[in-house]
Length: 105
Image 1 (cartoon, one colour):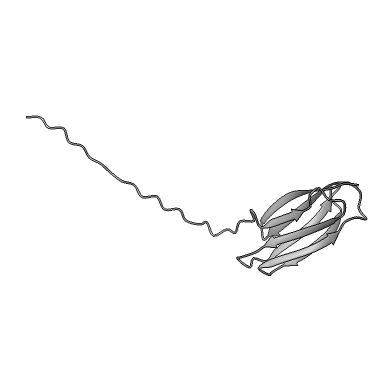
Image 2 (cartoon, rainbow, N blue to C red; image 1 turned 180 degrees about the vertical axis):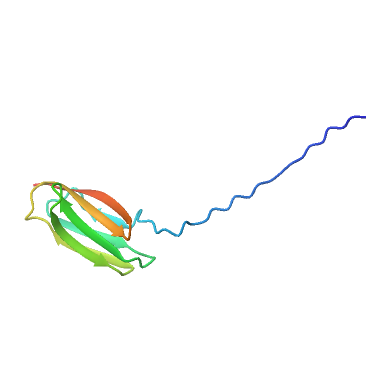
């Protein structure tokens, strides 16, 4: 007598954090593009020590702030700077997120 046996096996997958903070979705810049006044809006629910910097396309530094609060909102007047592309860097330790900001006339 031959009998077929069927074995089923289940696998549980557990996702765990690597412990590294993520900078995704923390930074909002508006309006973008802008004619000069830009609102920098940072949500920081984990109270990370953040730094935000704005540099022109040549790498010249034009703005920076250290952020260690849960919510940071600041209007920045960039109207004195030339139209073009600017890089907005949000960083904590060795993790950096770069966003593009466009200034127009």
